[in-house]
Length: 388
Image 1 (cartoon, rainbow, N blue to C red):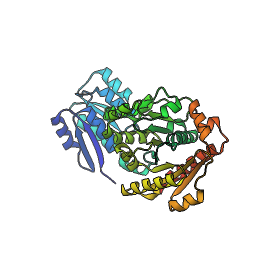
Image 2 (cartoon, rainbow, N blue to C red):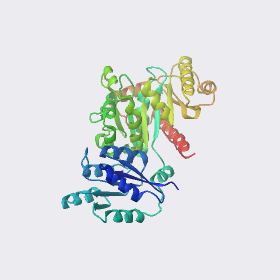
Image 3 (cartoon, one colour):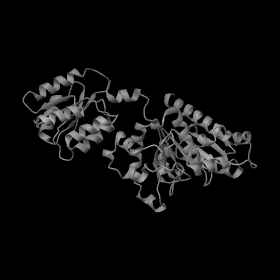
Image 4 (cartoon, rainbow, N blue to C red):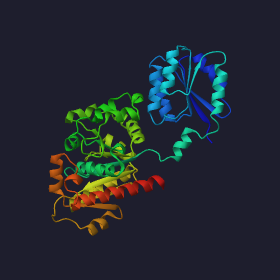
């Protein structure tokens, strides 16, 4: 069993040193930070087993800190002690209401009471061990078009809707990362979404699962939540690439499925997403040119260290034109998983114009049924990867 990790949020170094000597040992490790924001970073990053905090902090109100810790699922159940010099009764009441387990004043017997509380926690597994045995973060599924105009965004948004139809809209998040200009906001007629610019511009320690979910309202008629793309091509430069990785961690902790529509981009943001994706869907037209482009993209992914089992192909044939047969495609793809969506060009165009899922407008069409089958198959693949 790993040593229990205790986080101490204490501005005063002398107090921190005194507590460290009293607490460490007997299988305990203490991490000390001096500010509330540092405390949030460590608490959410390191899956600590106990948090001890001063209420009077230099950068953030102590009650607000406690509320943020209790709102986030990573620290929602972590034992939390307020050890403070603040003796105001109203502050004690506020802290208890916000979610602390104990409120201790810095008096001569405070350390003894604190040690008794720690001993009372018992030899339970650490938070990190519990997390390792849980289902883990939500699945990240990336849609990448092998060239423009293959219907990547239409496939991604309707795929996300199918997952949400089965799992619930609150469990499925779609991110529009089709740069320099995304189209999903227009497809869904969304008005209350959180944009990728706002998401990556946020002060990361302040970004919690609850904060994000409170700002995302599912588009009317769609079984998904949405983070929209940029409204103007020039706005893509405002995305903070360094924040994409931390944002993905927070989002995957909040949703069962996170779907990223990358369009045809293989820029820095897309490559970062692809490196973390559980499943990559390559969307292509089933002609020789489309197949060749798909195979070239697959080779590029292999060179980036992405293994073959993480890649599936989605053949999107919008109209009944001359194209390669399914057997020919399977032979040339060399054993890679292939799913096909047939003859839905007019249907998808009309559904997009009406801002509704294709399931809602054409529930019995072959293309709709094929998309539903693909969504079910993708769930199976992702589930097998996460439990295998």
